[in-house]
Length: 255
Ligand code: ASP
Ligand code: MG
Picture (cartoon, rainbow, N blue to C red):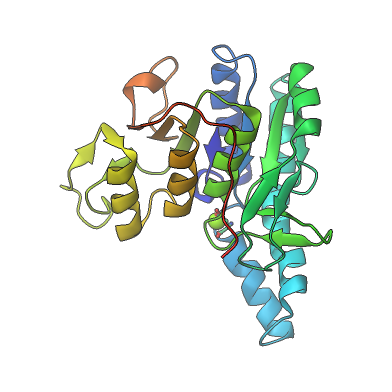
């Protein structure tokens, strides 16, 4: 399950999405959650850095902005604890998300999810801070803006997850941004090439995440956290259907 920054703009939102996770845990025995930074936290952190240095060293910028997702993941684990559900949060680095060393624009080259697998086996919900990983040199990296979608897909690939649910602030994928054109055509089902073409024109899911999901034969659903109702997930949103069987995991190419 992946929750974007718009699903957590206020502290009480963590309790709302914890409810969705608890409901889904009645259907799926193992759930890994990827979460983005709250609202416009990432923008605020970049602005903060610029007040100290107009062109901050990229390594230090990554140290700073990776914190946004870390805040969200810890708060979500707390919200689940409050609902009586055992959960544990991890940074990208702790989750074994190995990236290129290209700060602010790293690609995921491997995932070693051993720690996550152990906690999933103990029945815990694992929560991973999106948008970040660790370079082979041990440095914290970030994946570029909107990178949490790619974290979710890479993690599902590594964990052998049966599907990924993306919880967004819109109902799914449309031919145009529904916030600009409310009459835009809504897609209930898409293949990957169609979904990638739509995503490249603007938004909803990062095209990079879709390209990675296509390669790995994942099944994705994009739906609204606002419309979520118990038991109806399979009727909501846009389903992106894989065109290949699951291969052994492959990750991103270093440009
Ligand atoms: N928080 C990061 C950003 O705003 C990553 C993400 O939201 O996916 O770009
Ligand atoms: Mg964000």
